[in-house]
Image 1: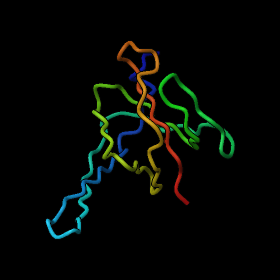
Image 2: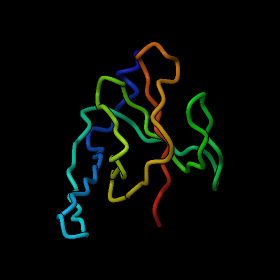
Image 3: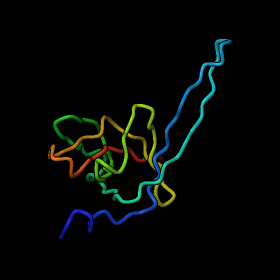
Image 4: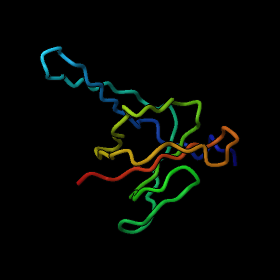
Length: 111
């Protein structure tokens, strides 16, 4: 079975928040969305289980798995939505195997 066969969810949306200074001491927030063509969200474990990799140690309830070429994450990427649920991005995306084949992003389900 190839990796592509596991990335079965096609409606995962990443939300990027950009803050713009208005020059008067305030800022405005703009949220843009991008839909991943392929990926999957897995529950990391029961409750507040800890997901660990060599670049990310954050309390995550879920993980997003996708190909590194599918999306370039930035610090402005704040949330992921799928199936009516919203997740906050935790930590930094990690190319787990360091071969450019699999990227894992820690998520925390918002309640």
